[in-house]
Image (cartoon, rainbow, N blue to C red; front, side, top):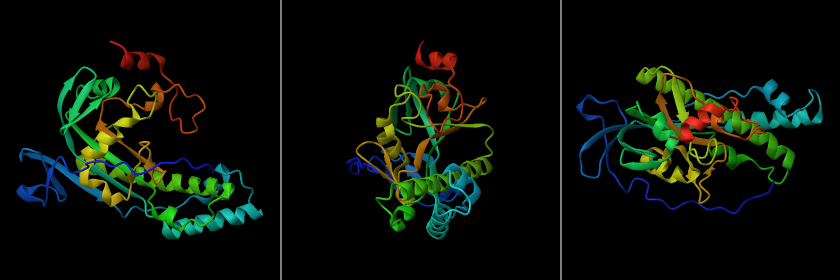
Amino acid sequence: MHQIADAPLQTSVGARWRISQGCGSGRPEGYLILSSDGSDRGVIMETLTKIPFSADTDALMKQAHVEAGSDDAADLAGLIKLAMSCSRPKAAYTVAFIDARDGDTVQIGGCLFTSRALSRKLESVERVFPVIATCGREMDEVFDAKGDMVKEYWWDLIKTHALSAAQQELGDHLRRKFRLGTTVIMRPGSGDAAMWPIEQQKELFALMGDAVPGTGVILMESFLMMPNKTTSGILFQAEKDFRTCEVCHRDTCQSRQAPFNKELWGTLQHE
C-alpha cells in the first residue's frame, strides 16, 4: 500500500485553557474547562474506552468478496480473530457553547471556525458536542502483514467496523446522557472542500483539548488523523436530519450515506 509522508502536527492543544479536574458544584464527573480569563465555561470532557466490539464475520466476508471455505476465508477469519483480541475502539467528546456568529464564521468555546455551512446549521443552536471516534491504535500495533496489499485491505475493513462501533456507542451515550433528539454531525473535510475545510481540524482539536490524548489519536500535518480509521466533528441537536453527503459532489464515494442535494448545497453556499 502506497505510503504518504506525513508527521504529527505540532499544536498548542490545551495551551489556550487553564484546566482543572473535578466535578464541583454538582456537575457531572469529567474535566471542567476554564476559559483563559478563569471564568467557568461549564464544559465537560469524557473519554469512552470500554466500547464493545464484535466483528460481523459474514458481513466482512461479503464486503471483502471472499468465498466461504476458501483459503482467503481462513486468512480473513484469522485477522478477524486477531482484531477481536486486540481492538480497543475509543471515543471522546466535550460539551461546548456558541460564543458568537458572524456571517461565515462561528466561535465555539473560544475557537473560531470559518464555514458558511457550519455557521448556518448552527444558527438556532447554542450547545454543541465536539467529538472524536477511533478504531484504536492497538489494531495498528499488532498487524504484522504490512506490505501484503490484500491483507492490508481486509484489516482496514475490520478497522472500519471497529470505528463504527465507537461511533455508535458515542452517539447512543450522548443521546442517553443529554436526552438528545435528532442529532446531526458535521466534520471538517467532509463534503465539498468549501463546506468546511479540513485544515480546521487544528481548531477542532484545540477545542477538544485534553479529551484527545485518551483516545490515542494524533493529528498529522496533512490534517488527517492516525489511526486512519478515525473521525472527528461537531455533533448537535437539530430538527431535521442532515448528512454532509448531501452537499458532496463525489458520486463514487463508497461511504456515501445520502444522495447529493443540489438545492441544499446552493442554500448553504450562497446568500
